[in-house]
Amino acid sequence: MKVLLVYPAYPDTFWSFKHALKMILKKASFPPLGLLTIASMIPSQWEKKVVDMSVSPLKDADIKGADYVLISAMIVQRESTHQIIARCKALGKKIIAGGPLFTTECEEFSDVDYLVLDEAEVTLPLFLADLEKGCARHIYTSQERPDITHTPIPKWSLIKMGKYSSMSIQYSRGCPFDCEFCDIVILNGHKPRTKSTEQVLLELDALYDHNWRGSVFFVDDNFIGNKKKLKEEVLPALVRWRKSKRQPLPFFTEASINLADDDELMNLMVKAGFDRVFIGIETPNEDSLAECNKTQNKNRDLVAAVKKIQNFGMEVQGGFIVGFDSDPASIFHRQIEFIQKTGIVTAMVGLLNAPRGTRLYERLKKEDRLVEEGFTGDNTDCSMNFVPKMKSETLINGYRNILNTIYAPKQYYERIATFLKEFHPHNKVKVGQIKLAYVAGFFNSIWALGVVDRGRKYFWRLMLKVIVKRPKSLPLSIVLSAYGFHFRKVNDKINKKRKVTVPGGLAASAIPAGADYTAKNRESR
Image (cartoon, rainbow, N blue to C red; front, side, top):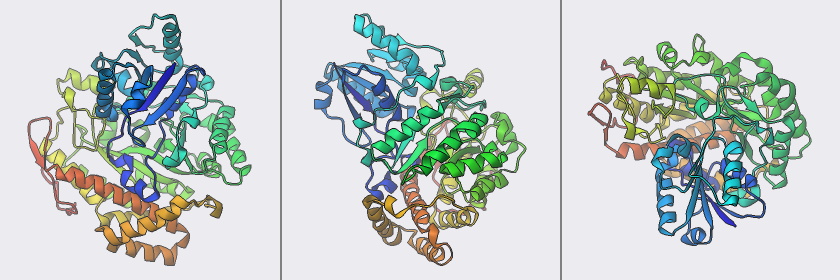
């Protein structure tokens, strides 16, 4: 039996880092972890091939040579997924599909032969057993939350690791919080389920044995969901593991803001090799935090919390949202002010959307405010799937003004400088870890950022300051500068879309890049 495992193309978004990756000769940020894990669950006697369309094209010959085509996808990959399905159908191939896109929108994919939904540890064995007996059903679904201590190590031999900037592992699933807009608890539940410490070390060993020496992303919904186990077992074991390696791997992950409340946990994470953490900050507006039930962010000094984490040696990457019912007209200025003040360089600001199955989706459905065709999975493309309470023109123009401001060269490089003042790194890169791609990346970056980019004046101003005052931060400064180059490229593409039709029937025009955020967005709702 031959199975072709396909990961659809990821669109050019802020999160793709496509334009920055070109500088270091990489094709994609992360490998298709779920698909590689599925590959390890499929019978060993099956012949397997993986095609990640962000890395290499899907050829008709690949499809024709397979008995089954297995697709796993996220919502943001919907367009590419439909194209793959059409090609497979035209070539007469049977399709097996699973992952978040199919689990939340299974009714949209009636033309898929086999839908293996929810968590694969439960539904995939049932499907494979029925397939072997010749009685496979169209849909397999289950609300069971499996014990992930039996989840196998991903089959890394199926990809070319050198095409990616980072590798990934999963330690836990689920999140103890209940944010109204989040579908994590729908897909993975409230109670964090964890792998064993031994599993985590074995997965890291597997990456190391495949000669991976770059960064590793712990893709958990909330890495600190079970603090006790982290502090008592996992992090101490990671500290020992790193000490045993000649070239220890740097780690990064996602967590909630209450990480700042636990000095012991932050110290252990840094000692274990974590130097970056993505945090969903969402908004500085208390009423909006209460509206979306972001209880962990309420009644705290968010600026101080961010700076504390940075002081401990972890770069904070932040997620922000506008479009809450409780957002005042001043929210756009406040978001920019917060981002600039904290020095969150990688600040991802999106419009609120309501994924299917979330409490937000159900509330808006009852209020008859949903626009079903509006949800693209990319909350930065100016699309919304509901009618906002704020005047649509005000919301879209205000949102675009945030992007045009925080990604403008002046504000962006100011933010890097602010961050470097707060950041106290503990993990140093050894000479042996510097690879050819990164040497090439250095020269490519200097050319793109210091010669070609419109922000080159601010780039050189920052570089000179770093060389004089913080020379050890030069590599990180160049990396963050490269991110900014990517963000500006994506934002330019958004701005070319001069008119956007939004729920409520109003057309919003783009505000010119670099607009003065202090003078904009004074219009009332």
